[in-house]
Amino acid sequence: MEGNHEPKGWNPYIAGILTGLLLIFSVWFTGKYVGASTTFVRSAGFIEKEFNAERVSKMEYFIKEMPKIDWQWMFVVGIFFGSLAASTTSKSFRWQAVPTTWESRFGPGRTKRAITAFIGGGIAMFGARLADG
Image 1 (cartoon, one colour):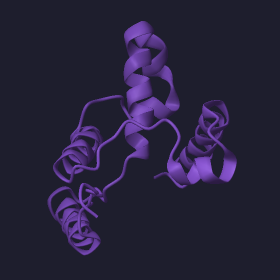
Image 2 (cartoon, one colour):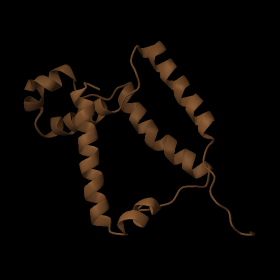
Image 3 (cartoon, one colour):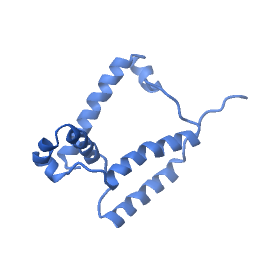
Image 4 (cartoon, helix red, strand yellow):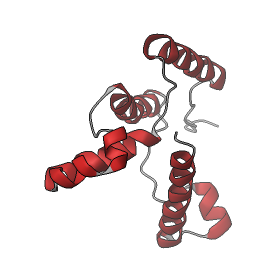
């Protein structure tokens, strides 16, 4: 079919190998595994610190995980820009509030999708923080 230019993503094997190498180098150079959940908590503390620094400095959790911009925070920012670059170079980038698979199963409603995504994200973050990840 002429004119049908289906966007082609990255080869999953190459992406997997690159992700594995990133994990190896992360442990090798920093002694820590790649992670993201602590960064979200630190970012929340970082923002709250702007409004009430005294409160944040007294909170037990933030004494352990001081709100700061570190390698892990930069890693999370890199995830955003890396995925943007990957989707742009593969010509698969598009704005889409409701994914096609979701729409075919549950309908085009954005509200239901947003609520479900928020609850799912909350459960995933709770589990990650519970495991100290």
